Length: 116
Image 1: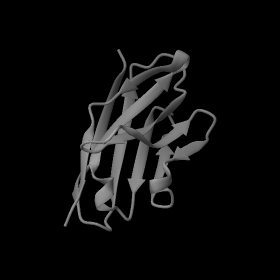
Image 2: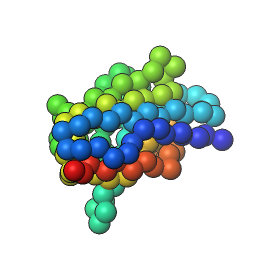
Image 3: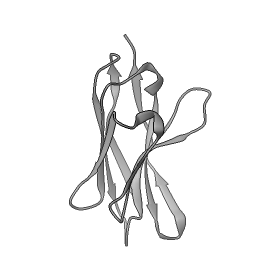
Image 4: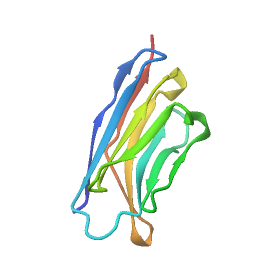
């Protein structure tokens, strides 16, 4: 059974930094991509950043230059470093892992609250 365990998140002041980590277990075969989506109240879930199996990364335009995603050597962990956080970054952040045949698994989500 595939499980995604997230850590990090919490309350931070505008301009501050936070780091989110996600570890996948129970995966048999390749992980095509791992990363993070987020969902703010009243808004649709959106892709924040992903690390694909070919080594490429993708970021939402709103976080480019502020967020950075990295992958562990085992390729089953990802870390999202978030800098220069803004109130608009407030959301529940969900880790995801995309497996072959477009099968996607999700973490339970972790709240990031950017507020003074």
